[in-house]
Image (cartoon, rainbow, N blue to C red; front, side, top):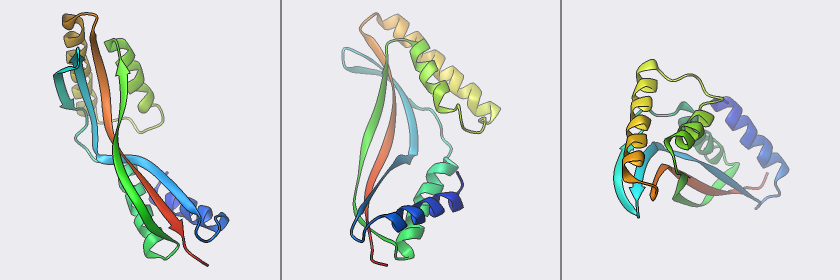
Length: 151
């Protein structure tokens, strides 16, 4: 969904909320994903998977700014947290990663190759570390509450 579509969706939400009603927005922040490998809680490997900014994340931020600047909503509160997916094998990790891109544009071939190499490296670390090893995909998420202003 593009910026205009996101703004339109937020405007429609404002129309159905009572004045003072809350909208909860949850989306990733621009830091992107990290792939990590652990054994017995000890970090063995950590690297950022994508260096590029997601246009969808940027659109979400711009859409929220747009509806607050236009006077439809006011920011009430915001916090960030880590969203972590755990995997016991490189295969599980790859399946999850593939599911993330199922509805997105195909990444640049250079980026796709880099990701493939990172996941292979994490898989090698998992295999070499034994059955107590785990891999994770960690991303930073922002949750924001916005209060609908009067019409």
